[in-house]
Length: 454
Image (spheres, rainbow, N blue to C red):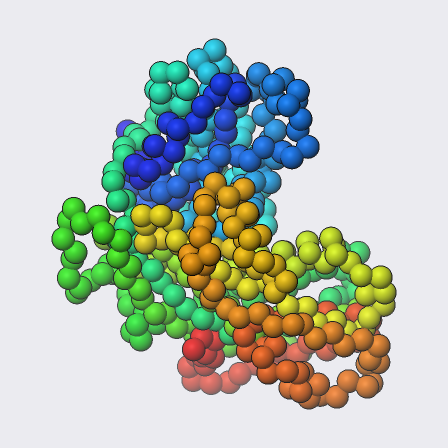
């Protein structure tokens, strides 16, 4: 028996509202959450048309071979940034005219593997053995409205399609659970001369991978308590009445503790590394994950939050690097020291749901630009009052032309307090000579923990 997909009724209505008179096919993404028993689909969004396509080009797209795989995967990458912990791109849908029905499964298979490969390439985490590796494909006939739902195991490129159940439910995500935490980040990434040929983005990602191990191996307090991983998250709490479709959110406050050593048997040695520079990430980030309310396990909730912590820091760095490439100023490469403010996070509710989507905003971006982005990428109309700003942004300070010997030890303590308190600041130090990274072994009876949250 195949997997079951429980789908928000609004998703079904969204798919039926498309008109295929102008195009022979319409593609898009299915967004939701996996669980061991069943998967949940709470949102669907069509692939936006490319701006450079003129009317003649659009009218010529009459075969599924004309599907723009590169554009669809780029859309999936952008959308994945806008998903908090617990949500992911579950699969692909295509709405076609009846005459294209024969070729649609080959196109869906090709797209579902391409999208998954593109999204996972930039993650700081990998799927575990316990993760559900099935991804869904949905074909909708524009004429008969008949649907065909199948899944593919994305761990196996040669996997055969399996049939799956597609069932609608009203108010599916009206009472999902929210897990919130604030992480204080202070990450130092030395830029080794041996990797000087790498891009700044790649070097930074390699450094973040080391930090990610700390987050993965940390301890998590839920509302001030340590809970067993296999326990139910709602254990000991009153169950809400069934059939209630009013939007309610139950929030859990999570504190993150990371131990200074990976294990007590780990032997550390001091190392000297010749570096051409370094990157420092410093500040506070707001993290949030959502999980279904159908007997969720503590381990699933914590995994969703851990992955949101890793995603939000990694995504902000990636967005900043993209912005620096697009708006590079003359002479900036000659600066020995630069300060840049990473984009801050905002949350936006899904209509009729307790789940919120997210986006990232630079200080000079207007609310209108955020609204346009949600409309283009997620086909969601967002009101100004819907925006929930999780963090404040401040102007970045840029210091240049400082020689290595002119930088005192307390330089960074003298930076404006608001720069490190309310935003994550990225410091890029170029050509600072030799940096020494030393790790000192701690001789203690037990583990030492360092608080990274409020």
